[in-house]
Length: 206
Image 1: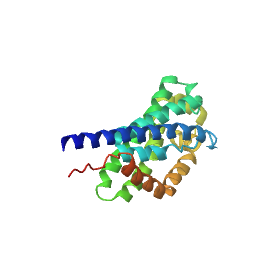
Image 2: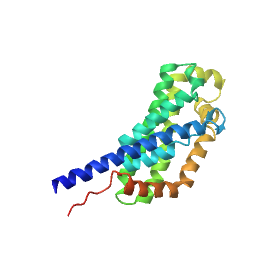
Image 3: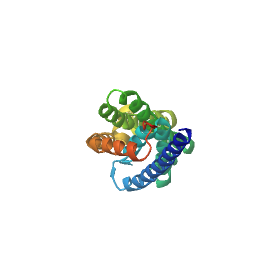
Image 4: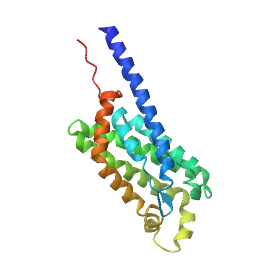
């Protein structure tokens, strides 16, 4: 029985590595695709979808990892160049942190709610991810780019200027995409738990 348990655990761990590796690649590819979808200053973020899936399947740590990869890819694609020209350390911290915390938060929320209702867990985590991602961006803008944005705002309320000038319609599009694709996200999570060693997968032995 012990050998059977070890074999099954090894298989699940292998499937987890494969599944997380696949999602990591998807995050990178989708971020490059997102570069062509631009409204206003920044591109639309499509990568929150695989981040939500990964955080639900493999836990908040994996969600944080996928968010970290998302942040690194944003920096590599040049989508953060506007802020990099002003404050390099501040930009790197903000971009990496917002992605990692969005993934971690989605994972925490999913784990908390899925015990009672998986559908509700997916919906809430799909909402939490873009909210945290955008919220950390706004906070980072205040902390690291206050003077720069104040000059651009020219007397306009800074919070309103950030929402309109930098966040704009992007947040609502990202949130809408996550909600519209929620049934697909739920189905992917169910398939992933069955085939790729999701975190809630149960090892049964005779």
